[in-house]
Image 1 (cartoon, rainbow, N blue to C red):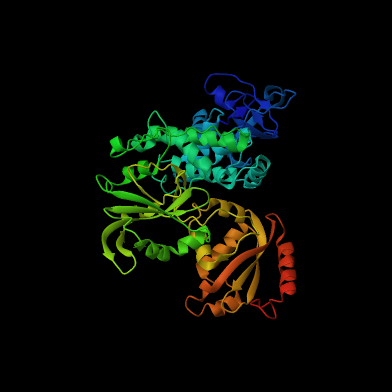
Image 2 (image 1 turned 45 degrees about the horizontal axis):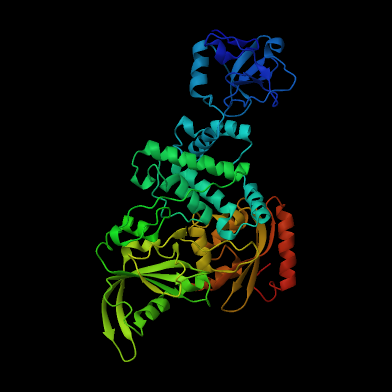
Length: 534
């Protein structure tokens, strides 16, 4: 049986008829400057590594052909640098190992970095492409790790330094990037109506997906879709990791129904574009846009009060909906922004003593757009009802399905149980919340709104506060003794409200976190008068 020896030349090049001397790289491996194949040499053992180098050689050139003399070529153990004690006994074995087990050689560019990450994270787990090796190699070269959440803090600093408003936050772009990786593999664009959009996100979607030469909604070829998505991903990587300025391109408007009566808005994405693309309900129908403005309530409170708003809408002092087949209703927000909260078929009208009462039936065909699409009502905000076919409304934001609201800061919120449940069950829609809460440890409080009693707890370890609060959504009580007793009553957990008292670094030792938790229990007296049993 033959044993394959190495004399300091690249084994991969040798079996292909070329002699290329190995060089010592910055990680103390011998690396081929052409193929980036690496050997870890220990005395007379030369372990052929499965991950390739990145061409970062020592400043003073040291060549394997001057240093290695007859080392035996071994396979590596897994993806480590250790030998599996199995030497190659033929050139054919070596060739098979290089073909099937060593990561394929790839050019260093951002497309390959992104592609290797998407395949590693979301590809078929039973294929070679799912190996982390190509991603690790590309990642080392670019010094970019997509799963290192330190980037969130860096983007927050960038937001602060540039005075960026919330709807243009760079942290939103990180959330979009991670969503794109997941969808890229199968060329899927069906997520577009489901994904929330900050202003930057929307503009970049316009640039890469809706813009000419052809909007992706008209493209069925998966190869073309993946190419468009990859261009989008690379643009985001350069913006997030290389500090590139955002170069947004507004979208060319799709044709309207009844286009002869609608003024052209050639370079904006409008409500009419989206609705006419999704339904034929409004073809040849008489439709009004309605905007209700209430400055006294926050976004989440308005959503909770939807039944009240609907009843208010049914009662009108004048016949404002006379002749309408449908009305499309919005809640007025700051400035002239308006949130879509429902579309209603007008089934009839009843004249009552002092007002007109409309029989309105909600259109469920478009439920997935409600509480999500934000338009600019325009300069004539005082005109609260307008004809749909005469007033194109620019879409300025699309909120995610299951969206809780903008992340207000680690110590600036209180969530009731229903809100926490919505948050945890819709992580993609609330990526900012998840990114922040999973990147810190902390001490939190649960307030029983029925009795006023409090519980103090702590979160530490992998995914920090997010992981710990997820356990409450799953079990209702998080395994805490007194909370378990309370939750014996069906639905009692709906009385709980959650807040973070102190955020702590994710690398803080468990004992230190528990010590801070214990101090806060003592200060607030939750062992004696609250819900802590120890």
